[in-house]
Structure formats: structure tokens, C-alpha cells
Image 1 (cartoon, rainbow, N blue to C red):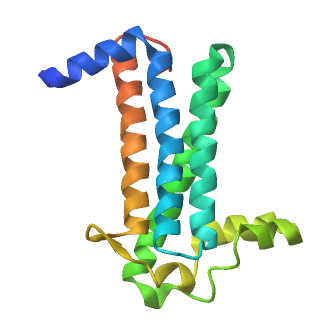
Image 2: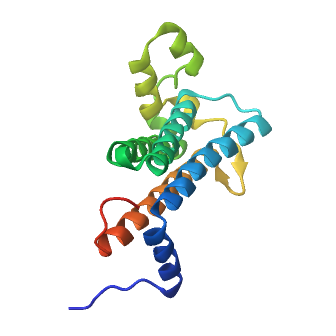
Length: 183
């Protein structure tokens, strides 16, 4: 039976994770917040109207970042706060994957993506916002600028995949070395 070993560069990162798991959670949470800031800046730069899917992705990134930052700051509640971060990343991944799918299969998009976040907050229909954030519509699949060869939803999908991969790598390193479920 062959054993799996990490490449040489990963050993340094795994040592950091094992010695300072709270620091890695701090970096992960800060990265989530930095992605939100970058997407907001790009939306302003390209003068994009923020659809329900984009708002949803930003909010779940804020949820994930808050969960990871709370896990770093409050180790006793880490089990709950890590679940918040995981939940946010998985919801965001689903939304970004759906929006990327809609970009290339516009015929499967039906109706409007819905109004922005403020509209849903005013009418108090949070279920419709949640549905629009995960399913989207025709508005979410059109009028997207190319940024370095990719559309903004594709960049969001890459960001969610990267954040999940970093979190999973931390979990794998800790599990391999017998630590509890803290990255």
C-alpha cells in the first residue's frame, strides 16, 4: 500500500497550520472579506447593476468570512462558527456555479433574476431573495464584462473554489496529524 505525502512546499504550510490554526482561520476569513471588497470594486469600476445572485454571493461570502473570523477569535464556539463559514462557502459555490452555467446556457434561464437586495428587504420576502440568489434568471446571465478573459461570475466561482480548497487543505492537514476539526 502506498502512502500519500505532501509536496515539499506544502510541508511548510502544514507546519504553520498545525502550529497556528487560529492564524490560518484569520487569513481565510480575511480572504473572504477581501474577495467581497474586490468584487464590489469591480462592480463599481464597470458600473454593473448588482443582481440578486451577485448580492447573494456577496452576503454568503460575508457570512463565511464572519464565521472563520469568529472561529479564530472564539475557539470555544469554533464548532458552530466553522459551520457558518462552511455553509457560506457552499451556498456561494452553488450560486456562482449556477450563474456560470447560466452564462453559457442562456436558453435555460427563465424570467428575471429579480430585484436587488434592497427591494427584497423592503418587501420582506427573504424566501424569494434566497431562491433568486440560488437560481437566478436571464438578467444574471447577460451584460457581464470580460475581466482578464473571464466573466465576473467565473471569477466568483474560482474564488469560492479556491477558498474551499484552502479550507479543505487545512482540514486535511489537521486530520492527518490527529488534531480536532480545526484548520
